[in-house]
Figure 1 (cartoon, rainbow, N blue to C red):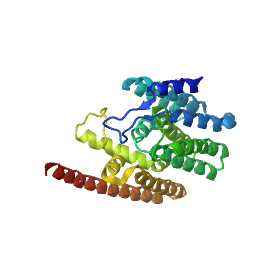
Figure 2 (tube, rainbow, N blue to C red):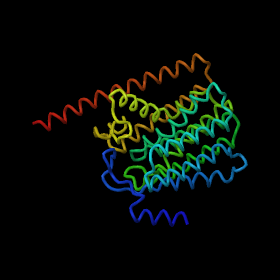
Figure 3 (cartoon, rainbow, N blue to C red):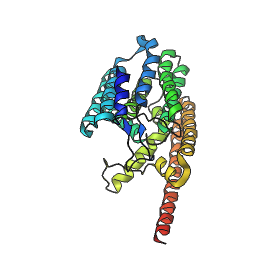
Figure 4 (cartoon, rainbow, N blue to C red):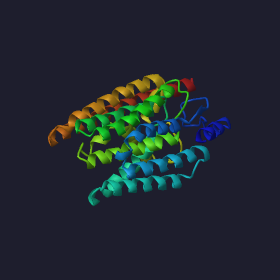
Length: 313
């Protein structure tokens, strides 16, 4: 019944991603991939139902339904954000987060939920981050002897891989908010769960998903500094600028995949380090991201200056 509804809506154009000023594509693309991703996740999870954490499953299903409605009806931003906060608070209670960590963890979950949506703007990018990110979560679970926790994460990665087959350049389908919002929430929720179980340090989820976290966070801070309207669509993310500078969707995705592998692999390596080693690892990655962002910013200024000179000629 749900599939029939989706197909009907899609034929009417209400589940098409129509290009706008933020878009990097020029033709309408069906954004029903999130339905397939969630179906794939639940198909894998059904065999592990006795290991479900209700405080993850219930809010992610709620976010999926809300985001699917948003894909069709364009819900108000305040309503969506309220749903994100409610989902995050459920995780705080279910995971038993210490009161000293309540506010930072709450903001972390809400930010991860949203930034994943912000980063879903290029063929193969969000699907690839889910594949690599949750696979590294799963490997860390295996390293700690929890096969069920590992399989819950591998199921998400496998669902993302199935979606990626249709989303890698040139994309035939997009995941929409119904895919990006639940994936961002799951990245945060499983990150908190693993941390609370002692499988990894608090910084581990941020480093694993750092290709998304750093891009979205740096871009937000720069827009705040410039006094821009934060709810207005834009194309200022680093991955968007790479594409506009001629890298294209495919090359940008491959470069991001290499970054994801390095970040996730080093995060796994860092789990066994002492506090000083972990601090050095994070400082090294901070220098890497600062260097990459500076390089892209410089190239972007050169690109814009050249474009302006050509236009004025």
